Amino acid sequence: MPDSAATLRAAGLRVTKPRQAVLGWLGEHPHATVEAIVAGVRESLGSVSIQAVYDVLAACGDAGLVRRIELSGHPARFERRTGDNHHHVVCRRCGRAEDVDCARGEAPCLTPHDRHGFAVDEAEIVFWGLCPDCSGVSDHHEEFAR
Image 1: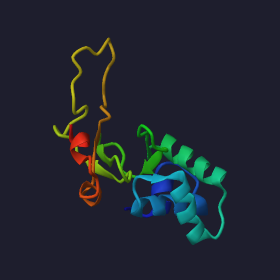
Image 2: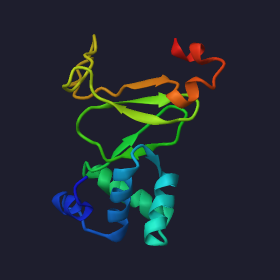
Image 3: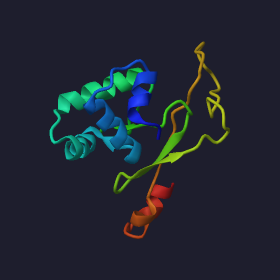
Image 4: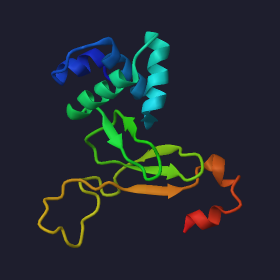
């Protein structure tokens, strides 16, 4: 990941310790919840409010530096990987999420049959299943494979 201060400056954002800490931590811990980000940033800064982290995520999201991921049944997650139209695979049991590159390599990866007049530029796909750690634990893993 590029230097957080340089990244913030290039996006026209003020460089602050909370912004640097959030971007730095997210670079090492993709797909993190706000709760995890707050805990991680507090380890490096000593203290930061939950609201400050939300403010950083909002500003960085608006600047295209952070992507918010909405997974059904899970709290929102955030990552630094933006602008490449990648997707995610999520474990139904433990919630682990991993990146999945676009199958076709250009946005959008899927072309809808009827766009209803929309100029579609992105497709957001989530694959669900069991991660390698959980697949041996579940008695019902075949149920999730359908």
